[in-house]
Image 1: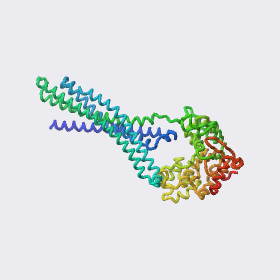
Image 2: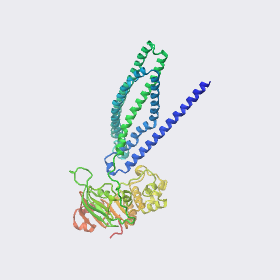
Image 3: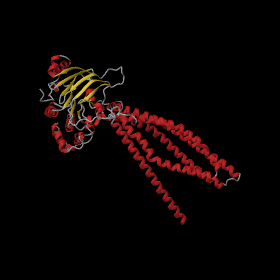
Image 4: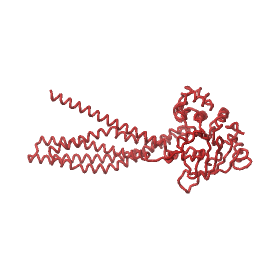
Length: 534
């Protein structure tokens, strides 16, 4: 009875220790993985737009999910099993050595073969796993692209083509995964063969020792049982090693991002942006190209432009002339290859990014809304803004009326990328967001391109009030909407070719005059966005 009770207590303690070991190691692994995910996501957030232009969203998402998922499996689950098997292996070898040192050396003779095969196949597993993860990322990117463009896919009846494209990516990932499975299969086959060879040798050598009277049959059976226990531990460790190598392959893709330094960062010794920023903007000898190839033409070349505080400057010209690229240099989405950009006489590269971008409000051509509520999207500019402040900004943008008609008002969810709102509604929400931010400098990139005539009438007064006292850069192809700006700057092929007021440029009878006359003939007169400017 005492022996039975002692065994129950012993096994209970073992169970508790196993629980503690599994939980603690898993908790540490989960926290490490969570920290790694946050670190990777944080690193991606500070990458400039050029980084994302060269990579697909689905590929980056795959690194956050699939790649780190492989690491999670090893760190959270298999580390505990690894530690248990190490203890079993070490303990078994010690017991065997105490029982029969000579036979133990015989049993361990297969270890070099096991270690050698592990190293040989491990390197190949790592490379193949990286390839598998790349193929999975390609499939994820294809799916993400199809979902994000679902209206285009369906309107052109391209569902079969997208299914085929995704299927091709999946088949490529399966082929790579099968290569990995073959390597794993050969590895475990070699491991199994080595283990059984070791057991057979132990049985043969042990039988000779029994015949010589150096070992009893019972001791041989006991030795074989311990040997099988060690073999099982070696098999489990080999499985862990295989998973570890696969995790290393995934980790390489993760650390490729973590070790990539963003090309646009805060300066080491930043200059404080004065509280009373006037909003003077200057481009001095600015040249820029997206490609690093020096043989390709400049996207912008020798741009010299100064915007006085509170001045409204319209950038016009043919598509591809460099208008959007020019204003993208101001918030440092890109840095010029030559020249510099100044804010109140300070080189913007000497300012903290948060200070610089905090002084700039942007209403893009295609407003970017998040999948939260209307209120959350407007308050994105100032997360702590009250409902009253949000409503005030919405009223100024003439968005309050349509928001109130939504099912849940300001708490209505707009869907991913704002798909539940019309183009004009999304643009008015974006304008309200810019109003709430109350920036010193405004960038309006085709800010009314999605509004009908009535909507333009509604926001004309709001925009005029918003622009007062703010330095504003407006990009528009609809020339009638900017003809009352303080100054128009005409860009063509990356150069400033004309500059002046609407009337002055018409008198020049140059590029602007030709563009204006062409649009005036083709379109009905559009409502002017900017009022109160003579």
